Image (cartoon, rainbow, N blue to C red; front, side, top):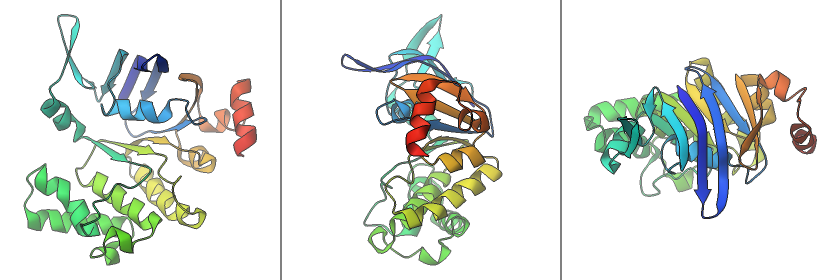
Length: 250
């Protein structure tokens, strides 16, 4: 589903990604771990072309992200073409990013109605189903300000699912939440994994990565230090840098 080969990304003179190789198979959960500034979120944003890569190749479900290849050369897609491909990728951000003037139901309906041109009745029914799925069916008429952080994040997950994506990206979805609210969000993500959704998750939730992840990828300073089965990487890491990181977060 995701294939990165030698992916590089620069911000000015700072090389944030230094030749990342990564493969995520369909139906797998890949957890990206590492200290702040290691490039995890940047890699996630490159996967759906919120950031343009400066080198290498990045493909989702066999299609190059943000580019097409012709005659051995890469040509950047127009923004409309990028947006069309981005519909297949759902993204959940750290800070929810819900529309404050819309109810939970309206937030989930918005993309299918405005982007996919779905009928309002159909979109409303689907939105209600998704809110039920994340345990918020009784909060459909509430505005974001009337919801807890955990509830807002679950609405954000429902909103991302509304476009029926083939891939879900999570950028530290629990880091902005009070500790007692984290569990409800992780439960929804566990269920998505059980349902076969392909997921790439930037997280500091080591227990989640060990329990749900098919692959754990430890990054530092823009490189993949160690990758493999979470039960190996997180329990018996081979690299000293991985061991040092885990000793501070466990």
